[in-house]
Length: 222
Ligand code: C5P
Image 1 (spheres, rainbow, N blue to C red):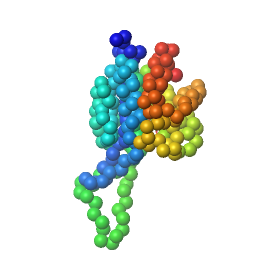
Image 2: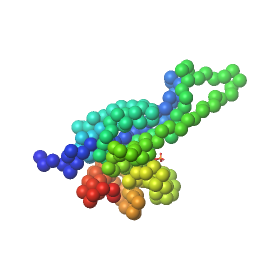
Image 3: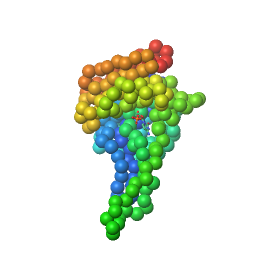
Image 4: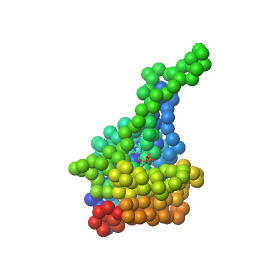
């Protein structure tokens, strides 16, 4: 077979939720299924790339031909991403928990008074921003996702600038996207917005990989 358009490239993808322990029995997490991130990793592998996937806890199988690292927390995800760098392309599709809890070594008990415990939240590292803002060794292309329930494009543009990535794939998660097999996305770059119709997540992945190949061929950032 002919070498794919991504032959010789290392593509690093994050996918799925993270899981932040509260105590040995409980955690904070979110509804990410990992379907979109895993589909992107698989599409990049089909394009000939060497692919590393760093996945939070998901119920779906590791994609074919992809080196998959399994993690739970955001801090573990950051460590696995840093261990996998350098990469030519970073795609942060994971729904990383924004906050973690300083976990209790023992299961938190109901107090005799019935007063509920207070969870002190600490901010998690922003993996996408860390990768995008690396000096030497920054991937040529850094892609983030933005799951929003309103003002999707405005939030995506703000995220692009604040995190320093090259492309934000934005979607409206008000519309039952979590766990679904299809997705309706907008590609937001510094120069414009491209909106795609509702497509299967595999089709979004294939088109996103094609879009990335075109921007690399055109000489850099989209
Ligand atoms: O700010 P927000 O969480 O909406 O940004 C989403 C994008 O940032 C996604 O690409 C997600 O993978 C990434 N992200 C991250 N680390 C975080 C929070 C978000 O990599 N702590």
